[in-house]
Image 1 (cartoon, helix red, strand yellow):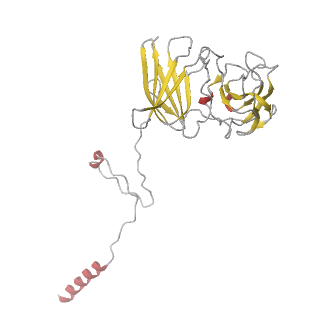
Image 2 (cartoon, rainbow, N blue to C red):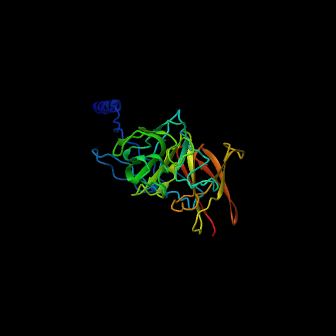
Image 3 (cartoon, rainbow, N blue to C red):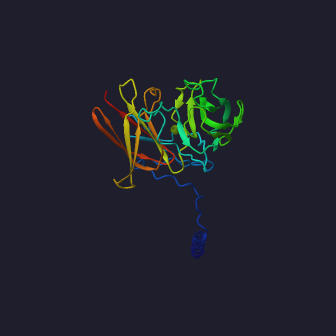
Length: 319
């Protein structure tokens, strides 16, 4: 009996000294839900297959709708660079904004102004083809001849046009291809201008000569670095616009202390074709309050502006 006991004892020693076989490394799967804890485990996968985690279906988040929300922050349609570069003045003149009459003192404005010294370089706001580069003495781009003076019009993609008026010098010709930032002319005061400045327009449609094809340039020009833009729409039953005064107050970060107040107006009559009724650009990021009077009383709303973004606000008014 002793030999048998010795053999058995030897086998036990050998088996204990053998290395333990470890399973090959596998990908760690997500922890099962509580509902899955009671379910039976799946059959083992073949060694040639790779276990892939099952992704749960995610709900589609509906886009923000400014007609039902207090406001929406969007990427906007910014696509054009500023037609003036420093050291020139690249800021839009706030005293005569788009679709303003300056309280009845002037014709409704179909563009924006860049006040600059005579001879400052004017740049193409985007790449495209020069459609017109001359004085408007025989061709009308407004109801009047010689209104824009020396003018350049560039056609861009998607039926977009930019117009540069009152130039002292035109440095391109019709048919030229230009890139954003190319010098196309110089600031002047030709046509119906009372001082040296650049009149800049954005037009959209098949007829670039249509005076009422204009869009607010502040919706299309990239906001200056560190700023955003605000679009306000007033939905009413009125068939006609009027320059309703608007007051926009900017507040200090994290407080109710006002730091700046902007006074502007809704678009004038004949600008009913625009979907929005007022636009403010060059706004520092932060919290703002929009306020105006309506026949039903004072209307107020708090919104936020973000850098490089467009804040869209719609007021649905009675009447």
